[in-house]
Structures are given as C-alpha cells and as structure tokens.
Image 1 (spheres, rainbow, N blue to C red):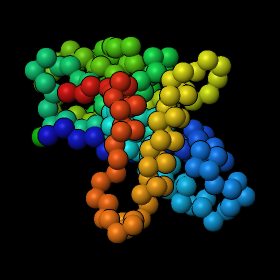
Image 2: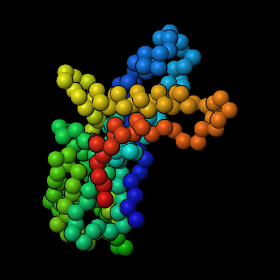
Image 3: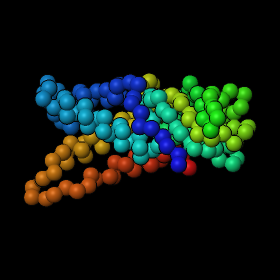
Image 4: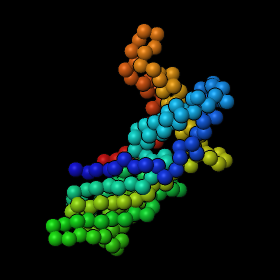
Length: 195
C-alpha cells in the first residue's frame, strides 16, 4: 500500500492571505481582534482543504512517501508537488530496506523527470520498502501579473466565507450537514492527477 504522510507547512499560511484581507472580504471590522484566532483556523483549514482537493501543496512542506515495492516499470509519481512550473520537488532523498539490509539509493540508480520534478524513474525496479523524502515548493502568491496567485486567493476567500457563514451547526432552525462546495470548482482546473 502506498502511503504519503500529512506534512506540516514550512511557512505560515498568513503569507498567502492576511487576517486583514480576510476581514475585509468578510466585511468585519479591521480592529476586531476577537475573530483573529477563528480566522487563522479557518484560513489553515481552507488551505488544507484546497491542497487535498488539488493534490498540490500550496505551502512548502517536507513530505515522505512510502512504497512496499516499486511498480514493475519503475516509474513513481510523487504526490503533492507544486503546480507552478517554475517550482519543483527539491531535496529528494530515497532509502530502502530489505531482509538483510538497506540504505540510501544513489542518484545514479534513478532519474528525476517531469516539469515539476515529480516523476522518478528507477533503473532497477526491484527495490522493496522504498521511502522517498522530498520538499515541495510553495505556490507563488504575489508579484506582478500573478493570475495563479490571485485565483488561489479568491478561491480561498470564497471557502473561508462559506466556513464563516456556516460556522455554527445550528442556523435559523436548520441543521447544516455539509459545507457548500461551489467554491471547490475553482480548484478543479488546477488538480494534479495522481495515480
């Protein structure tokens, strides 16, 4: 069974959206500090939800990916690699273990391919218990003419707005069972297909 770990971001999600930007979008008073911790939790949840929806890391993370054995063709697709083509998976380290030993796999034993360095092709596909450690790059969210960052911010604000609107389980006599997902359509076109 393939396993990818849940990784902790290397940077704070406030670099993508500040509390003031969120408060402005939600039409809250800027000097209302009572909502800050709630807004921070909602922002972190929205970023995490977007990353899981797209299979892409928005915030840079250190990731580990485990495979009990390599596919017969020796081709591995790394999950959660940044979608930005100027960024890629970096600091890739690969280890394996077997009944009598194990250790690191030399970079001469595999080739890194793909626009985002998200494909690893092993020359010998017979390694067992392979663990791949890598660092994902962050999505760019600032700079001139950054449409990807602007679209991401807008989608995250929409998710945060939905979470804020439905932050209670009880609303005018109705029980809210699901979060409206129309904002997820923003993320669909940026999905990283992972097989």
